[in-house]
Every structure is written in C-alpha cells, then in structure tokens.
Length: 461
View 1 (cartoon, rainbow, N blue to C red):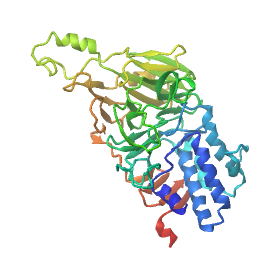
View 2 (cartoon, rainbow, N blue to C red; view 1 turned 135 degrees about the vertical axis):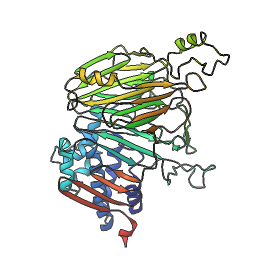
View 3 (cartoon, helix red, strand yellow; view 1 turned 90 degrees about the vertical axis):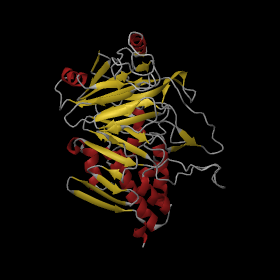
View 4 (cartoon, rainbow, N blue to C red; view 1 turned 60 degrees about the horizontal axis):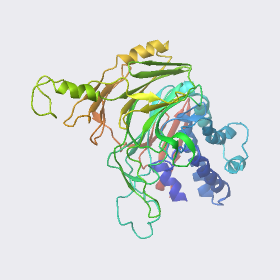
C-alpha cells in the first residue's frame, strides 16, 4: 500500500479520475486504511495523500462542483450528483455529516485539513484565473499476449501520454484530457469521458460533449445521451475544441468485451439553466451569472463546394484549380435541437466544435462578448480528400493562440505553432500546486501558507 500511494502521488491520481461516483468509493478505502492500518508510517503517508487529493480538488472546483476532465463519469453530465464528492470535504470544513455507507469512515477518522486547503477551498475569487495541467495514469503496455498473471488485470505501469488541462476562473472552469493519438488506452480510460465547461452560478449550467443514445444508453437507462463517446480535443485557456475520435487503440483484459464506440451520433449538452441564450451566425451564446459561453460546430458546406467545383477549370477533381480558394465555405446550420433545446444534435458525427468562454469581468454584457467572438478568425482549409479539412481558429483575448486541428487525418494539434506536449514534465502544475513528474515531491502554496509533501522513495530512508 505504501508503494501504491507513493506512485499515485508521483504519477497522478486514480484511473477513475474525478468520477462523481467512484471517487467516494476510492476515498472510503483510503480513509479506512488511514485510521485502522496499525502502521504509523502508512498513516503519515495517507495523511499527506489526503491533503494532496483535497488541494487538487479545491483548485479546480467552484461552488462545490469539480471542473476539468473526468473519467468513469457515466450516465450523466453531472449536476446535483456531483454533491456526492463535495459531502466528503464539506464535513472536514465544518459542514454537516453524510452518514451513508460510502461516507462513514470519512466522519470518524482523525484527518484534518491543513490551513492551506481551507484557504484554497474557501477563496475562489482570490485564486483568480489560471491554467492547471496534470499527468495521470491509464495508458496500457502495448504487449500481446498478456504476460502470465496479468490476463485479467490492467497493466498501466507506463508513462501515460494523457494531459489533463483545465482553465480555472472564479466564474467557470473549462477543461479536457488530451490524449496522444498513438496512446494505448486501457479498457477503463475510454469509458465515461467528461470534457467541457461548468459555471459557478448553477450546478446544472454546463456545456458538455455527449454521445446521443436515441432512447437507451449503454446502461439501459432511459436517457437521450450518455458519456461514452471518445473525443480528440485541444485546449488553450478560454478555448476548447472537441471532435469525435475517428479511431483509437485499447488493450483489454481477457474477460472484458470489446465494444468499440466508433462513429457514434454525438452532440453538445446545454441544459436549460441559463439567464440568456442567443443564436447568431452558427454560434450559440449563453450566459449564467458572471460567465458566458459560445458554441460553434464547424462543418464545410459540401453541397456548395461540389457545385462550385463544376464551374472551375482543371481536370483533377480532388486538387485545387488555379482559381480555387484554399478554404471551404462554412455552414451555419449544421445542427438541430432536441424538443426542449437541452441537446444540440450535430448533423455530422465528426464535426469539430468550438467552445469559447468569457467572463463579465472582461465583457460588461453578453452582446459585448458576442461581438468579440463573432470576429474571431475561423477557417477550414482543404486537403487532398474533400471534407477532411484542417480547422484553424484563434479565440478571444490578447493572449489567444492560433489553434490548428486536423479533422481528417490523425495528427497532433498545435497551439501557437507548437504541438501539444502530452508528456508534460510536471505531475501537478498550477500556481498553487507543483511537482516534477515522478519526483514525489509536492509544493503547495497559497496566501502565505506553504506546505511541502514528500512521497519519494528517498523519504523512506
């Protein structure tokens, strides 16, 4: 157990990352071992691990709702269900006790939150706006046949090429897990994937890419959507772009059925918890409290381009004629709505969709935010294959970077001309939480409080 928790601190948290359900199950066992292992060294290690866990939670959560990427977040985009995790920390902050079976050991152990966690958890405004990058586990060893003794288990002792990226503000969070296109997934890392945006004003105000189930989801629950679609994503601060992955590779235990979820009908979940909502020029704009969002599916006008092609010179239909433009015309009508307008259905399942975020601190009105978004440069550039275009987009703000995403071929996206580094050199990397990858040495610092934790194997000596 000591080895396990040291390695989680060195490489990133549980594979079931930030799951509203499985988190309380995992921490239930941590609490039990913390209180009753009978091993003083393990008790000290787990005390530090719980502190690390709650510091990481505090910096990416607003109004008790954890933002950023999540895995094993099945069935729902969230909402009040997220309270299942906040009940654990709220008790340690002096809140009421939830005495249910999965919360019980949290109530009776001796763990106390250090002052730095209190300050971070209770001062979202003071923490300001920042980007949090984190590594994690989940990439499998690409070895078949499976080594004897591992046929029915996960073998994820790898330097996983998964980068968790979250932009945190006092009014919203926007985040995703970006996967290297060649990463080898485990059977758990591809299920229940959550990307998107949360708003401080309401737990129901969210924007989340989803899989459209058309009646029953994979859990045989009546629902118009679930979280089982896989997306390739690219994220920089206020801008997130998502597109359903065309393919990925996973290694499964021998007992697990391989039901690849390729080519699913997909959409964007909006819900209806908005102060304002406006559609304009292919964008859908919403406001909740002090935060804004703009959503834009980006799809080429295939009918227009094919008709135009007949009128140009040249005899190679797949290549540009001398008078052809390098870009294609964009549609503004490539989606439809569910009857209650809670779900945006994408007409083409591989449409790339932009989510752009903003704050009232930067834009006094929704109209001002809309004006800034509508003049952002956005284009689909042609490739050899019609429809397999390259999206180029620059978001709002003086610090915005040009984002390039191939919508057809498997490529690594670029931000500001630089490819995404999925092997980020830090396990935890924010202004308040820092640790070099695999070092096990953690520095937590906020508002005059400094706390150093050491999970390295050298600390055993």
